[in-house]
Each structure stands twice: as structure tokens, then as C-alpha cells.
Amino acid sequence: MDKDGKVRARFAPSPTGALHIGGAHTALFNWLWARRTGGTFILRIEDSDAERSTAGYEDTIMDGLRWLGLDWDEGPDKGGGYAPYRQSERMSVYRKYADELLEKGLAYRDDGAVIFKVPSGVSLLMRDAIYGDIKIQSEKASVSQDGSVKDIVIIKRDGMPTYNYAVVVDDHEMDINWVIRGEDHISNTPKQMLLYRAFGWDMPNFAHLPMILGKDKKKLSKRHGATSVFEYGDLGYLPDSIFNFLALLGWSPGGGAEIFDRNVASESFELSKVTKKPAVFDIDKLNFVNQEHLKIMDPAVKKKIIEPFWVKLGLSPEKHSDQYLMDALVLMGARGRTTRELAEFSDYFVSFAPVKARYDASEVGFEQREPLKKFFAAFMGIPNWDAEEMEAFARNWCRANGTPLKEIALPLRWAMTGRKVSPGIFEVVQLLGPDECQTRLKYYGFLE
Ligand code: GLU
Image (cartoon, rainbow, N blue to C red; front, side):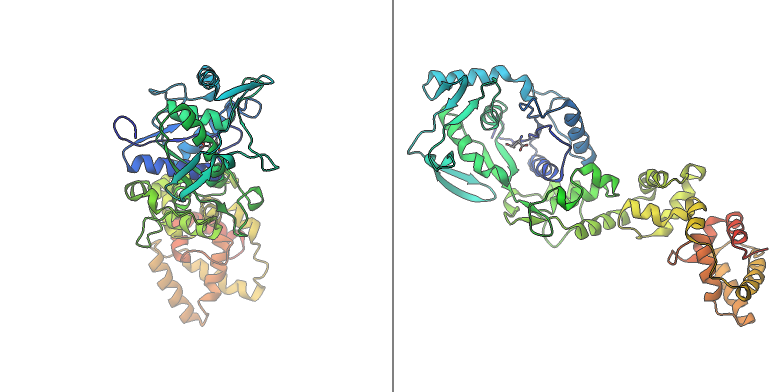
């Protein structure tokens, strides 16, 4: 704990790529723990690998965190009491502590590098909040391929600190008391513990998060599809859904609740409840979570989110009023698992072009056209442009003319939507309005 006994947790990405699912998962659990405990969430950029790190990726990672709603209290853009928050700006600190180890005789120079001497006969007990206690002997903390003890490089020949060293110095200097990160770092932890010990520093609490697997039970990777959070955004997943879904990878609020928002999650989160069992990234589950979030979304917000997807489909939502577009989305109900699907499924409300592209009425024969024309001529004259009245009118007309209702309703649905399935067709017609309905019927020759 820091001086006030508060949690200080950090997300420490290397800016060598966009914010991917694994990174977002780690950031999210740190954020949850800091928010749950009223602590501080820190963003630290681990850019000591100068060749692979770029400022562009640093921005993308920050944008990704913002998109997910994971705000940080200290960081390179925000500053804070422990600045600077970029490793590349902390070189003098790494040098100072390396000198300290050299002076104490705990490290030596070799070929320009500074190397920490792994002590022998030290028992390390790693207390992991998720994995439990892990005991390891110092001789096993860092080994070469042949099994012999391998001293730990802390400053490379080019003067740059190594990850295992810089992370210890930074976490100590920044009063980090919770290190929450992916399980792939478990094997690094004993090396880091040896360094804490050499400096005589208190160790932080460790919590390693479960591995994320693809559905084939192999470690999640590019082979499994989209990797960056923004790719999921482009595919039509809401930030709320990605947040919810990532939180479910290793944790759940209990009571079978699966759909929740940031507030509920940050009020009920418990690190001790996180499982070490590998979590499976199941796209069907993500689709379900996304659909549930779409269902409960306010229509005005939904409209704002769907609009760019309509535009991407080449449609012009700006030609319509906000109210009309919102009404269309309300009518769509729970259709569409993603915003992209919902935009596709509702394209006919925005414009006629996609309907024409999908449907040419060639299956409607001559003998079917005559009754259709008769029906629609009468239909267009109904006094109130109201779905219930339209339906009553259609039923009465069909009864009187010995025509099955579906012989009217099916071509009508195709002409309005270019699809086999849609919300109630008379409600669709009502919303499209008489002019648009007339245009579409005439185009298909269902109305003179
Ligand atoms: N930069 C490291 C990574 O991205 C941080 C690991 C850690 O949290 O210690 O994996």
C-alpha cells in the first residue's frame, strides 16, 4: 500500500502496436481494481525498446483505452506526482540504481553491459492473488538453455535498461503496490523479486491474469481474427460490450449476471474472485453480449453510433430527420448482433438504392400483377397513414376479393425492404411514408 494505504495499479504497455485484446484485458482489470478500491490507475509507457516503439502507437493505445472508457489518473499526457511516465524519459533513474547495485557488488560490468549477479540459495515465495503461492529457488529464477544459472542483464550494451530491471525500478519509484498483468509474466516475476530483494525494497502484490485462448484452445493470436480493440469497433461492437465481455474473461459479478456496465463492474469487482483457469474468447458470446447492450441502448445514442455504419454502406442518413432514424431503429428492435449488422438490416429505411440492388420483382408474374395493382391503388387512398388501419384494410380487401393476405404482404415487404424478413411490414410502410411507398411500388410496377 502507498502512504495512504490506497491501491496504486498500473497498465504498462509497450507502444509497439495497437491496443490488442490481451492488453485491453490487462488494462481493464487494473482499472477495475483501482476503481473498486478508490485507488489510482496509472498509465506508464514502456518504450525502452526504441526500435519498435513509436509515438503513433502510444496515441493509438491511449485512444483505445479512452474508447473502452478506461480513464487513468496519472500518465504521460496527464502528468502526476511521479512523472515522467515514459521509460525513455527515465534513463537517469535506471543508471542511478544500476550504479547502486555495482557499488554494492551485486552487479558487474561485462562488455559494456551491466549484469545482476543471481544469488544462490535464496528461497523466493511469490504470493499471487490469483495463482496462489508459488515457491522458487533463486537458482531457478533465471536459467540458461542448459539449465545453468544465468545472471540477469539490467543495462544493455547500448545503455538501455532491460524490461525486468526497468519495471522493478519504475514500480518502486512510482509506489506501485499492485502489479496486475498477463500470466505470461509469471516466469519473469522471480527475476524481478531478486532485484527488489537486492535493493531492499518492499515488493508489490502480484496478480497474474488468466491466459486468453481462442475457441480452439490455442493462445489467442492473429489467427483467431481481429486483434485490436478498434478492429472490433469497426466490426460493429460497442465499447460497452467489449468492456463487459473482457471483464467476463476470468471474472463475473456473481449471481449469474452477465450483462453489466462499468459502474456495476467497478462496484462489485474482486481480484480474489478472478479465476486462473484460461478464459476462452468466444465470439458467439461477444455477439450475445453486444446484442444485449444494443437492446438496452437509448435510441438517440444508438442512432449516433449507427449513422457512420450507414454512411460506410454508401447511404445518406443525413437526408432524414433524427426522429425518423430513431423511429426506424426502435422498429428494428433487437435485430442485429452488431451495429454493422443493424445498419445493414435497416438500410432500406435510409434509402431505396439497396432495395433495388437486392430485388427486381422478376418472380411476380403477369397474372399476379393485376390484383396487386388493384390492391395498391385502393391502398394508397386510405384516409389515415397508420399501420393498424393499413392492416385492417388489407385483411378486408383480401377477404372481399378472395386473395390470401400473403399474396399482398410478401411482394409489399420485398418492394419496401428488399428482404424476406423485416419488422411488421405495415409499420415499416407507415414509417417510410406515403410518398416513398408510392415510389417503391411504382418502380416495381405494383402500382400504376
Ligand atoms: N511492457 C510490459 C508488457 O507490455 C509490461 C509488463 C508488466 O506489466 O510488467 O508486457
